[in-house]
Every structure is written in C-alpha cells, then in structure tokens.
Length: 123
Image 1 (tube, helix red, strand yellow):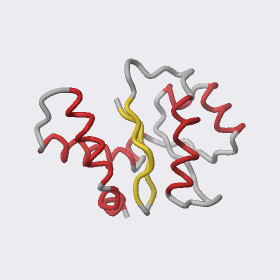
Image 2 (cartoon, helix red, strand yellow):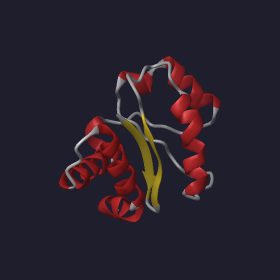
Image 3 (cartoon, one colour):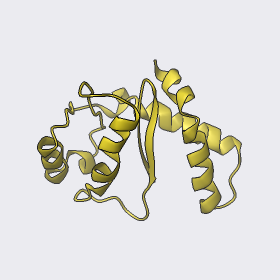
Image 4 (cartoon, helix red, strand yellow):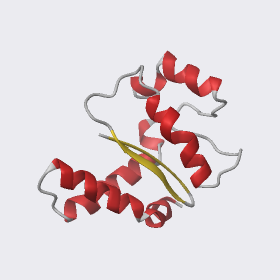
C-alpha cells in the first residue's frame, strides 16, 4: 500500500506502508503532508482531499487535521483526483512487469518521480 499526494505542479511524497494502515496512524501525515506542501510550493492556499475511507475520517485523523489547520472537505471516492493518479501509476508500473515486492516499490518510486506527467493527466 502507498500513500502519496500531488498538486498541479507535480507530486509530493510517496510513502510505502508496511502492514495494515490503521485509523490511529497519523504518522504519515505528520511526516509527509507539510513537507510535500513546501516541496510543491503551495503556500497557504491549498486543500487536502481524501476519500471517505474510515481510516481517513477517523476522529484521530480529523483532530490532527484540525490541530494543524489543514483544510479538508468531505470527498467522494469517485471524485477524488488521486484515484486517477493511482490508476495511471498502476498502469505504468504494470507495464514494466515487476517480479517481486522490492522491485515493485522501486518502480513505483521511479514512476512517481516522473511527477509532472501525473499532474498533467488531471489538469
């Protein structure tokens, strides 16, 4: 499982999640969200979108987002633009035919690093 974010200018962090992602785990947001915002030079005017998966709407996550002044509207899975990016990443990595999990992760990182093209798919 991967966590990632993007904006019109490109991609932010891509983080590999080992094991099961739990509702209480806001470490990924702590480690990667604001760093990605800075990398993407978004300033103060950005909105964080997530689907309505229970992990994303848990009280712990909502509290962290509120405490860190992150704007995040409720979002339908079908309307969340990151789903299009995941589909394109899956297509590109699949075309390269990884043979094991280590290679799969490496190819995901390589394709994610070609960041401009993902953002252009959506804008």
